[in-house]
Length: 110
Length: 124
Image 1 (cartoon, chains in turn red, orange):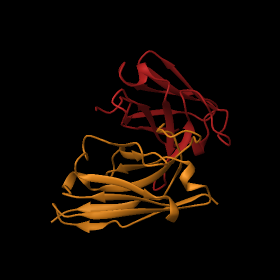
Image 2 (cartoon, one colour; image 1 turned 45 degrees about the vertical axis):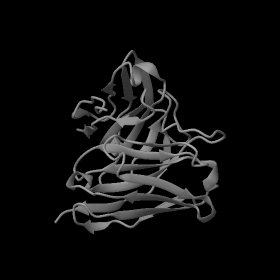
Image 3 (cartoon, one colour; image 1 turned 90 degrees about the vertical axis):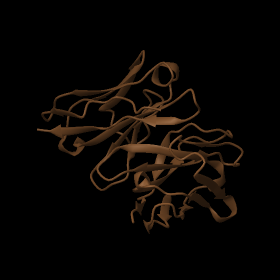
Image 4 (cartoon, chains in turn yellow, cyan; image 1 turned 60 degrees about the vertical axis):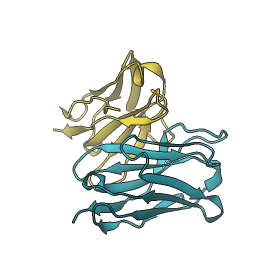
């Protein structure tokens, strides 16, 4: 199972909005609404930010939102803040009853 | 406080075995499916294996199938990963992860709690 495709890096200034894409196939993202997004700060464990394409867990800022179109899922962060600087990973259920992560995107807040 | 604490990592030679443990606390362990996810140094996350609360359904990534065995002991609130025939490419930080959803005997692969990980280094 190949990893989902994410841009290696994205950047934005405080207050701006950014979107991170995550591209898969009809056997994973395109076939199921089981897409999650995780935030990972250096040396820390990942943290769930979005589940089921667009559900935000309790305690996660409403500046984070998720969406999906075809085989591509997206994570949008609005009103960028310095503490948003981290690595972000998408994941999806697959038709083989397994899970696959994206390669990760490093977000830099300028 | 909900907590997952991994242990059992270390330096091991190629071809040898290692058994990882994950001690859970602060939640009803046998209500939730559990997974192992690993991260090679400087690399991304890789899903390894998952087990339902009842152990009725167990799945593995192709990269570890036939070499790794996941198990759980609900009476001891513990998750395990038996790793045999270890290879250099198994070198990674291994995380124990709890599924977000409960109320069914299946796997969803959405993790709302992660441990801090235990490092496994496979090298001669």
